Figure (cartoon, rainbow, N blue to C red):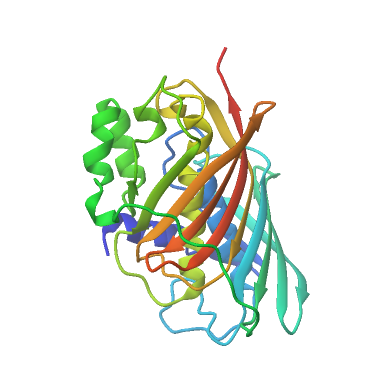
Length: 299
């Protein structure tokens, strides 16, 4: 496990300060607010820790073997988070059913809510089974790493900050990212392969939380591609996540290659919509993601 991944796992390993109340810290941000994927992942950790389940000795988060696993989350980003202040997560135990468990989490800083999450957990059961067909995508091992690709398209200091911020995750674009084709509108679709830069424990919650963390990194890229915009990295768009939803269909490992196939069906009113599917390398549909974000052109 590399140091960056270990630091990210420490970030997700929340401190419990009271029953159903947890505290998390933040890492340095690329912009003057907390990264949305971090808040969403930490909130899911807080929710998961209150779900009845057998614990596994040595687990960084919690083992859900014998208990429900996360199957969906719906979240709203209410205010920009302050990267220099702790975040307090309060969990409301909405429902503990035989099959489904529901939790509501509010993240608070400086006395104000900055984020709201509803998460649902389900005990495994057999049922009907079908899925879409995985799209074609290049082999991730043939694609350049972030350290190889970013300096080709961004100024040195910006590229270095992005490489450092994403060091815990091996993130590989199947095509040139939006900030590499500024002024050249393209089909609003983007594919990214990702996995953690190191092996993880078998804790299912850990893999789900890390996928949640990564899911906020690139989803609105497809909005930018449609308009030939590069985003915050080149300063031609101001953006922020508004809401985020995920459905976890099948088990997966975040330390093995996952294909993040993203597209944007619409942008209007200063907002852009991104929708995506996350696939395992062997073709199983693991996650569906939808996000709307602020996408404004500076004046």
